[in-house]
View 1 (cartoon, rainbow, N blue to C red):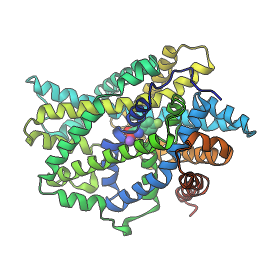
View 2 (view 1 turned 90 degrees about the horizontal axis):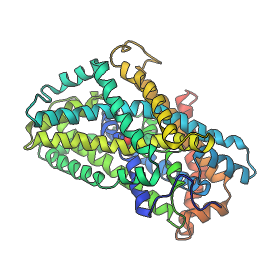
View 3 (view 1 turned 45 degrees about the vertical axis):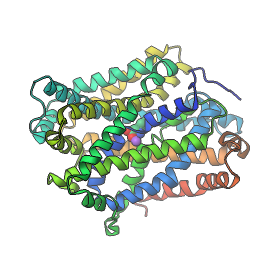
Length: 453
Ligand code: PFF
Ligand code: NA
């Protein structure tokens, strides 16, 4: 059994928690959660999402860390080796390949949206320096989407930031990038929450977020909720598995895994509670958000708040940092694989991955302007990529991960990796969820997606 990884190791339990939380907390919580919640009518959607986090996300979070730490290599090679050791087919490495492909797709649009947040951060910085900032939020956002050049530029800046960290490797790059700024972002969210509570629409927002209208539930809504659970926790594409490979032996997997799940969920819920009072108080239809929701609603509040301009700048720049720590983890699996399996250096490997993802991202950029007429299955290009990656590929990846951890790895291995501090009842619960409940739930959702049920 390998005790270290050739790519380096996290220096401590806390370093892993910071990195994995950095991966989880990002645009998924603050940009995507509010906007798809608004599109899906609130309450029922949020409760189904939370249920998926608990029953599907949590067991898979443990499974990915266990597989990664046991294998100590990039997902493709870890899965191949562990499968071989267990006497199972080497084609399990296909799960790693699926993860790498999903990673490219997610990274491609993720970087485009992170580019928007960078753009807004700089717009507020300009305003702070006496220039013209965000004047008419809706017009500003529409203008940004219309400009392929501007979006391509910021998408490029963000990709360069990401490759800069990944190129220098785990301890030098990743760890340093993921320590202080996350707590600051959380404090800013709490400030926004305070503002939201004072709008006089907080009750309504709580009602919208948590009062279920079960008549609204549809197969499509459940698919979206489960896709969001995977996306927000960075699961189903072997990113957490990759980080698990750098986790020192002896650190408790249930403990770190639970911490990451709780932190991510807390940020999403606080973001929702902060944003919806603002949306409601400015008379924006909460049911019609779309991907522009935070960019068109929050600047209205920033324009009114005391210190709104520096606050807006800090908010969007820190959101870019949160996106940065996530995109690093999106790039790491493919990069680690190239380093292991070719004779490319880490720098060259990271550059190749970034170049390909950036190019792919142009499709998302153009989906708002040059190619705005194009529809794939009724969706614009970026929504189609989001749908295929988040709602289909991640759940399939999660299903295979659960089956691998539950049925292919021996009970001896999983018991050992989950640690003797985990009580027997908790281990049994994990095993039962991982073997039966989680895969069954994912299968039902995927079947409804295919229109089978
Ligand atoms: N979890 C990230 C977010 O919520 O913004 C997005 C993400 C990162 C998804 C890494 C998948 C991944 F592997
Ligand atoms: Na998240």
